[in-house]
Amino acid sequence: MITRITSRILAAFVLGIALCIVSHHMDVNRSEMGRSSFLTWQSERFDKFYANPHGPLAPGPLFSGLLLVGAFLGAYELLAFGIYIIIKPKASSEGA
Image 1: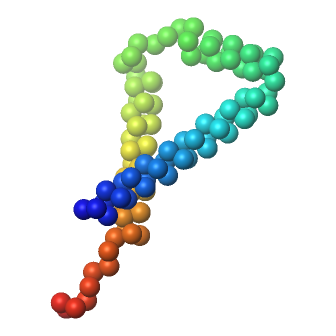
Image 2 (image 1 turned 180 degrees about the vertical axis):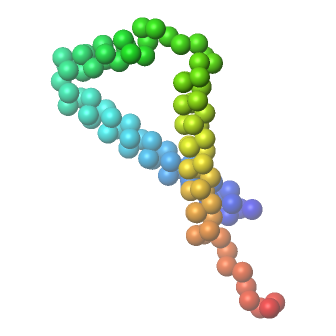
């Protein structure tokens, strides 16, 4: 039981670090754009996503949101299971 909890905590920690690395990479890329390029990019992004908002249950955002959450939870569960396999206690062969 403790091993299972430990593997889940380690998986959350690893995914948190991965999220921090991706966020930092995105920030670095945006800061390297320069002010005018960044503002142009943000203006295009606003026109694409925010100028004509969709309803909360529009098929595109709903499907992509479900897909994103499913992929993230799947990755978390696979990572937690992989860590559990690595750190689980070895079964003793005395009883066999």
